[in-house]
Image (cartoon, rainbow, N blue to C red):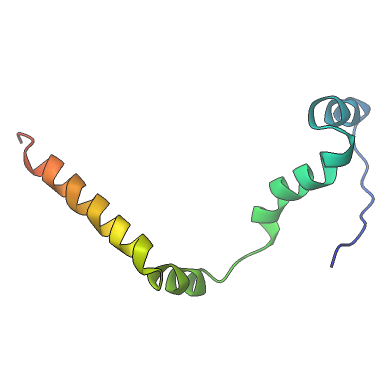
Length: 76
């Protein structure tokens, strides 16, 4: 559900938002900046979901193994 919010900003900020972001995109822009700071996801649940993605896990394992081989050949 979407909710309307009224905020007050400096005149220069207002003009810059209209000029750089565009009239109909300001709400989405502000939400994308604010959301990570105020909406906390359940990280444990997110990690469980990622671990269930077998293709992603196989790709991650291949990447890690390749990186280990690269490092193993470097002089110490």
